[in-house]
Length: 362
Ligand SMILES: NC(=O)C1=CN([C@@H]2O[C@H](COP(=O)(O)OP(=O)(O)OC[C@H]3O[C@@H](n4cnc5c(N)ncnc54)[C@H](OP(=O)(O)O)[C@@H]3O)[C@@H](O)[C@H]2O)C=CC1
Ligand SMILES: O=C(O)C1=NCCCC1
Image (cartoon, rainbow, N blue to C red; front, side):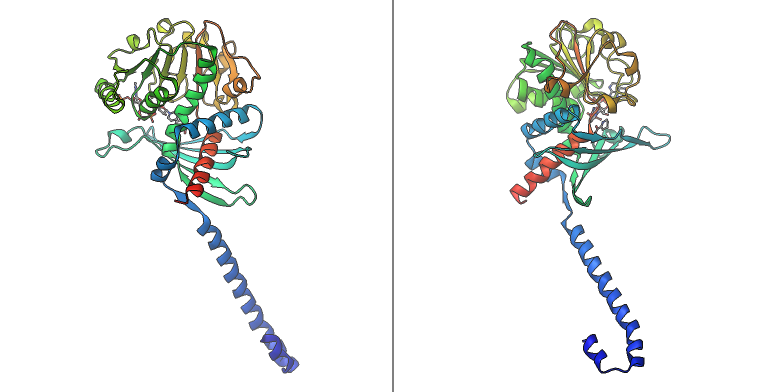
């Protein structure tokens, strides 16, 4: 229409029409750009905690974490050390965990935002101490595809990391799975108790907690839930640990709760708890006299105080054992898996949830 009009205008009139035309073009450009952006934004999903709980199975989480560990140790991931934003005068912290994982099935570019507010469970209306969300970004454009609620994922993938480590460092060595001891019965203690029963069929699962009543009621609750009596409440951490084949520590304890003298030769320990550092639940003698495996040596270096003094114990990454790049420990020294928690595990499980969500068209 503007072109048609111009044919019949004088030069003067034509000149005067250029400005309104440019204005119209600008308005149109802004309009289309905005619409394109809102189309991208509209495509960004939020997959909430209920959706995650509905679609994510322990088998899928286990598989995703196993792949993440393997890929990390074969150099197919990028994982930045996480940042800690500590709120002054408190133990409350916001962590950012960016990562990239190359894998057909579980690959993703993502970043987890996770808060650890240890006072949350004691609020009048109890809340989890850990709350998370995982951003999943398009690998070709960098545009955010989805935010996946990450609290259940963090719970499951942390326990799955212990389960993967237990499989490769202990079970695959042909060692017995009679007694499991779990120290700490918060969210991690509970999921470890249920997931390890599911994957490994222990005959006795011992539970100890600083607040004793919680361990007692969890043992009762789980025995009822599974119509069994494998879950046993222990009042004392030493007797809980003595004689156990596999030990899991899931507390924020800044002081040692497991001592070398109590640990059975050849036992396997998963140390999950993260107090001020990832090094406080087990005593130094235990670290020095065990074979130590990490999820990521690079990521744990800045967080695990004292790691540089443990070169004689440090064997490497669980992923390297899975990839058969290093052997596991078939000897009588205990094995320790110190899992710090990895961004690439969150990417892998986040991607799995994203795909499952679309398959099921929730
Ligand atoms: N490595 C990883 O990837 C991850 C590590 N974590 C870490 O695991 C730990 C447990 O997390 P989660 O279960 O979600 O948290 P919860 O808040 O649900 O449970 C905390 C547990 O720690 C115990 N605890 C706290 N302070 C002390 C103390 N001073 N001495 C002994 N026990 C103590 C609590 O006992 P009580 O009931 O008596 O208070 C409870 O058993 C935390 O340290 C957390 O940071 C969590 C997620 C991922
Ligand atoms: O990996 C994680 O996620 C966390 N690790 C340490 C404690 C907070 C959450």
